Image (cartoon, rainbow, N blue to C red; front, top):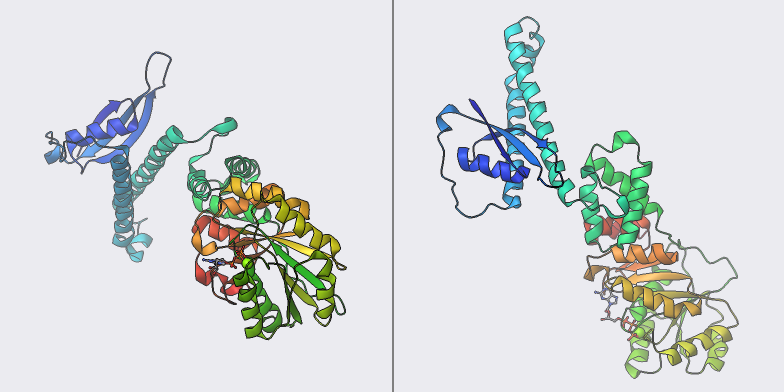
Length: 420
Ligand SMILES: Nc1nc2c(ncn2[C@@H]2O[C@H](COP(=O)(O)OP(=O)(O)OP(=O)(O)O)[C@@H](O)[C@H]2O)c(=O)[nH]1
Ligand SMILES: [Mg+2]
């Protein structure tokens, strides 16, 4: 076995040289920075590789083309694989009996000890190489340097579409408060980060309507987000699925389009629920009176652009005229861009939004935007709609579900436990 040293301005370049000279079987023994970067000179890194004597003769690189840093990273993981293989072989090749008699056979104990030491050293070197790559690319906004163990979770959260100011804030909190002994594994960093995110999602739990009381829930929001479908799902849930059944009635204010009225009347007929349509805000209380035997009244509204002031003003009239207090739910599509979500919330907020309902979880991967909106406006979320199926595709909002979707994507089977 021979040891050869290669130096270059980056670890990647030094590794590349080593591979050109010694081929791909060369084992990386150490990588270190031998000279720091200065104003007029680049940093110098040194890589030591070990090669079998027979292979020392310069080899032509297999491919002439430029080797990218991805190739180098692949080689690093190849080295990692080799190390774990060595570790397995070492473990397997020392039967328990042999381990007990290590004391007696001093010679072999030294061999095993040496191999173990080498393995530990190699593992450290690999970690160092990974850290070097991460440091080169690591974001350090607001003087916040993200350690390599945080790289995985940082990337996951970033690709989820979470606002970058939120992400930096949460990272900062994690770095400040996380116990030092948890920082050394990316798995524990991920768990800590998940717990922190969960605590940041305000959720409004489904509550029973007290005996003799009445609950009016109005669903407002932009066109086509799923207001009517959500009402159909909840009507079924409250009247047939929940343990304690409610007497549900429906009112639709969406009388602009014949199709819209028809859609909800069909659902109501299927579920044998009473339904009223109201055109004029002055008639709203009359409709309420005809549903006086119901304790939950779900109110559908016409979809309205956040910029359509007339439609929004008319909705406000209905709310103001009501004899009963109305719980206003803003329905939003999870796939919407964060900036649009903020704009929608801003323009609907004069209706005094109580809670948010997010739909179309099955149509997006960017759940970080949902998180960021909730975190930004500090309004609780009550339901997530996860598909078109009435009544099944609805989940009672819970922070675990949202954080899981953010970091690992939406999976249909997840809702099995969370909606109950
Ligand atoms: N993929 C998916 N589609 C949904 C979801 N919720 C509703 N939809 C579909 O979205 C479309 C619009 O749903 P509606 O319930 O009519 O939406 P709306 O907000 O009442 O629409 P307007 O009354 O026109 O403003 C329909 O095709 C629904 O089946 C969901 O969670 N996922
Ligand atoms: Mg509708």
